[in-house]
Length: 146
Image (cartoon, rainbow, N blue to C red):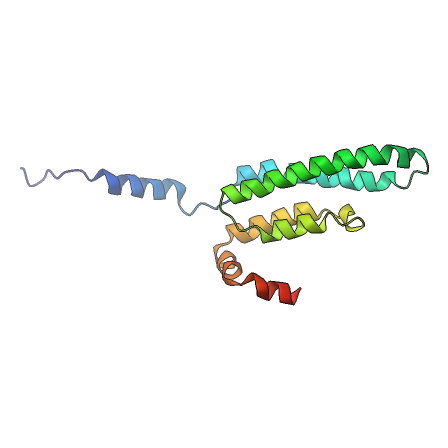
């Protein structure tokens, strides 16, 4: 009768239960994707609208200066927020950083590069095989290719 009773090893049970519940969870969850992507789309949309204001002869240029300063400040804050978020999650974010810096170039800023960089970062981060390949590639080799 005493042979049937064995002490519980709670550590193994908790680890197994956690793996059953979480499994191989991606680093960036769907909730985080659905919160950050619309924010970046909105910032890119604002930059596109600012580009259209340049076409309006006098009123566009008068409105454009304060609006572009405001839009630049907001986009900088959002970019810094996403960079900080990726830093806290310990995700290598060279793609998002490169596209955010490229998005600051005047004529190229009309393209939604910030959102595209975010989506590429999410795809690379959540794809384990691709993440290993990208993580093993030295930054110097990537810079030489570019």
